[in-house]
Image (cartoon, one colour):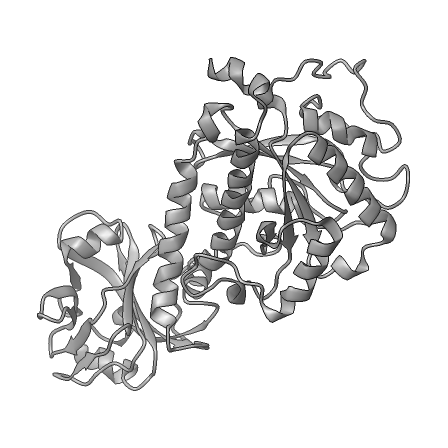
Amino acid sequence: MAVTTRLTWNEEKSLQKLLGNVSLSLLYQSSVHGRSMTDMLARCSCQGSTITVIYSRDNIFGAFLLEHYPKIDQDIRKKNSSFFFSLQNNKTTAFLNTSLKITDEELAFQSSNCEEWFALAPKKCDVRILGSLRTELGMTGYRAISYRECEVFRVEGIANKANYVSRITGATEYRNMLLADLRAYKPYADLVSEIRILLLGPVGSGKSSFFNSVKSIFQGHVTRQATVGSDVTSITEMYRIYSIKDGKEGKSLPFMLCDSMGLDEKDGVGLCMGDIPHILKGCMPDRYQFNPKQPITPRHPNFIISPSLKDRIHCVAYVLDINSINDLSSKMVANFKQVQKEVLNCGIAQVVLLTKVKNYHDVLQDNFLNMKKSMTSQSQVTNVHKMLNIPISNILMVENYASVWEPDPVKDILILSVLRQMLRAADNSLEDLPLEETGEILG
């Protein structure tokens, strides 16, 4: 009879994403194959990279090992060869220069001075975790944790072993740093309580998907609030001002994403160009039903006649499918240039968001501090720069959560990085506002 893992489908997918789109093969399950180190080694030795998964009452956690399991009483001492993780808290951490030693009784990860970080004792069904490691993983409770099950998987498909461990742990750490940064964000000089970012682009470019992606990260799971699609005509027919909550019951964060109808090259189809100034100036009410053939007028019952600074758009993101840039018609380019004139006249920050970047793992540099223009995206970035005359530093790349349901730390880094860049651009535009527009607020 085949042995099946206790991981749910979503948990297994989360582990695969955590490890970098690898495949997992179950080698050992303690309740089936025996609760001793001998039983464990019989199935796990000489299997290459492995991940050991522990199921306690409150958590799923464990350790990854890049090298083979050692033999009994043999040490593995190799820099960047292992890391620890908590699936429940979505955290990983690496303790450098860790050695792995196996005895008749336990599997132990130790520091260079033989201090024990993590020790698994199959016969006792418990694992001991040093306090500092528990803190790193966001775990609470006693040092010795009883577990219900232990599983070991062979990890297949690791692309680059040279910096594998540091990149995996670095991705999670940098993602969490970006989350903390955005949660602590406040608009420039408290001129407004929330930054409004307008998403503009052709039908199917990924505007609604970007909002869904941002919301998914702060909710902790992939969500689909905004309807998305790739029809010939726009799926979005209403103007929506979306707030972002930090968790399901959390507070609203100080930025909003404004979703609009898709731009179209045909007259009378898609977003009416006459609506653009009203949106930028803050006159457009939430849930306004767009009319492609006629712009909103002050006679509309919900038209905001005297918008304040908080009602206005503070940053415009031109959203483009990176794979369709070369196919943009001259009419579509002319529409973008017309929008740009209005944006510049209003003194609003502008960036470009290139979506559907398939090689997004290659776009981030090793330290995750910057995005790089990979060979497959360089020509598109250059074309957009020439077309819209927007600095290359403000041409951002992302892969949205459009068709997948499991989280990916590297994808999250790109999404959060571009959101942070949009907020910084908005802050710059607020700082450049004329004194007569800010003096009353500051006073």
